[in-house]
Length: 182
Image (cartoon, rainbow, N blue to C red):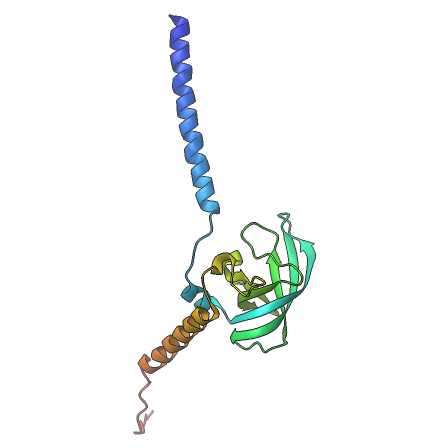
């Protein structure tokens, strides 16, 4: 009788532990997942959008957490938005962590970049870095997109800016002079 109760108790505990473990793991995995964002959101968050060639990739340090800091140098091939010009070299900082953009010397990629001090960061990590295959097709998170899709998103952003300028109330300045006597 005692053995049977112990076996039932152990079975109940095992089942509880397994369920707890599944819930814990699923919560941990969901926190590590990449938050998808739309092309329009990428463009809205970017200061520069350009097709670039990666010229250099160099580890430059390690944070106290153990995360590697990587300096990347790219050359602009085709600027689509922002102040970058053809042939301009941009410094991009990335980190050696999962879900961050990873560059290799010689690769061609389309980047959505945000200006930070004297360097750039890739908008939304790996989501803002769309490698371009040898056949010219965009791969990675940009699979199925074309440069014309990006140009339309940029045009939408510009149209929204213009629309906001037109809808912004202008301050009323009176031509009358107000006199205050003290």
